[in-house]
Amino acid sequence: MRPSNQPALLIIDVMNHFEFEGGQALARAAMPASRAIARLRDRYDAAGRPVIYANDNWMQWQGEFSDLIAACRAKPGPAAQIADTLQPRKGHFYVLKPKNSAFLASALPVLLVQLGVTALAITGIAADACVLATALDSNMRDYTVWVPGDCTAARDAGAKSRALQLLRSTIHADTRSTRAVGGLFPAI
Image (cartoon, rainbow, N blue to C red; front, side, top):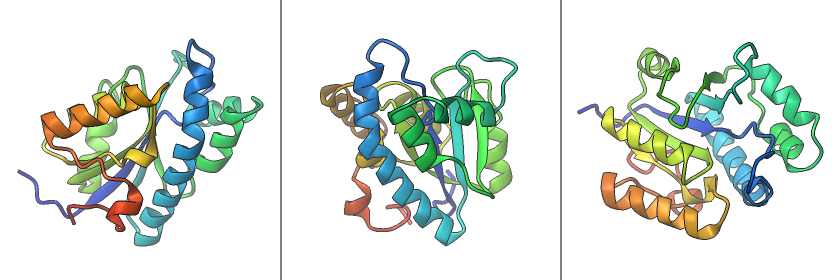
């Protein structure tokens, strides 16, 4: 078991075009979550802790992370607003992922080891899909997991609530909001 002393913030799938069934509902829920993620990101930046973006590549196998940001910023509405709010800053890390879990077929496992990360604050969209899969995979790799509820979104409140409850009951993840925790990571 790793000691809980080096947290990183993992921001999942926030560069999103929302052009799929249920996308508009997810976009509406993602707006307040993106503001909470930005506040938490500022806390990690101020503490000098790693901030890592893991984003679906939208099956664009020849694109880069900057292409995702540009595509989102070119769309009107929530896609552009969220991209403007949460685009990576200098010193942030990012990986592209082909499927739900940020660990599957990505460089994330190697990056976390190189950064000495032992605990993950997992944020982003969707709580009942990619955030859930990544949190479960994090637990299987012995990371301490915090999924702040105010920093996640799903297509509907019920789906988000069920996902967070599943994380609490199965892997004992902390799902308290950033306002309830007050610090960078509840276990530290």
